[in-house]
Length: 343
Ligand code: DAH
Image (cartoon, rainbow, N blue to C red; front, side):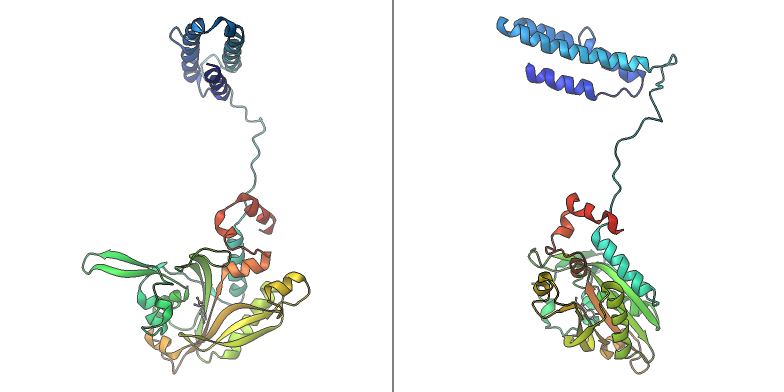
C-alpha cells in the first residue's frame, strides 16, 4: 500500500491540467465516489491496527497533494473555463544549445578550403555496383580489395534481372566515376560521404566511416598542380607548411602517392602519433590513370587530372587529439558537448 500511495503522489504532482475538462476528470478519478481515494480508504480498513497510524498519515499526504493540485488549478481557471494558466512571462526550462558533430565540423572546414580554390561539392550513392566502386576504377578482377573480407555485398531485387549483386561502397572514389559520366571537363569537385568496410570495430577501425574525395580534370593538369593544391590544403587546415609525397599504389592513379605532413616532434604526443618520425600520413592521391578516363569516355590524350582521398575521422582525430575512433559514433553527450565552442 505504501508504494502504491507513493506512486500516486508522484503522479498527482506531475499532473498538468491542460483544460478545465482534464481537471474535472482528474478530480473524479481521485475524489469521485468510485475514485482512488475511496478505494484506498476501503483497503485501509483491512490493514493491521499497528500500521493504521503510519498509513493514515500517508493517505493524508496523498489527499493533501490532490487538493493542492485542484486548488492551484482552480485559481487560474477563468470564468469561461479556459485556462489563463499560460503565463508567457514565466522563465522556461534550461535549453542547452546543440553542438555540431566533430566530423561535420571537420568535413565542412575541408569543403570550405577547397571551395575557396574553385572546387564544388558533389555526391553519389552509398549502395553501389561493382563498376563504380571497382571496375570503372581500373581494379583488376582479382584485386584483394574486392575480397569478401573488405566489402559488404548485398542483393537487390530487380524486376527484370531478378537478384542483382550490389555492394556498400568501400571508398568515395566511386563518386569520381559517377561524376565523370555526368560532367564534361573541366571537372573540379570534392565528394564527401560515408563508406563501409567489413572490418571489426576497434579504436583504429570501423565498419563505417567517412571520406572526402577530390577530383580535378582539365587540359594540361600536372603533378605539380596536385602538389600545390594539397600543400594549400595542409597549410589552410593544419597550419603546417612542409609536406612530402611518398610513392604508393592505387589502381586508379598513375603515378600514385601518399601525402605526409611534417607534424613536428615537440611534445610526447607528437612522438607517439608520428611514431617518432615527425611525419604523418594524411591522404592518398595521384594522377588519374588514363584507363579510368577512357572508361568514363574522357579522352586521355586531351585531358589529364589528379585525384585524392582522405578519411575524415583520421583528420578529426589529429585535429582534436582523439585516440579512439569509436568516440565519433557513440554519441555520448559528454564527448559531443566539448565541441560546442568549435562551431
Ligand atoms: N580510395 C582510396 C582509399 O579509400 C583513397 C584514395 C587514394 C583516393 C588515391 C584517391 C586517390 O582519389 O587518388 O584508400
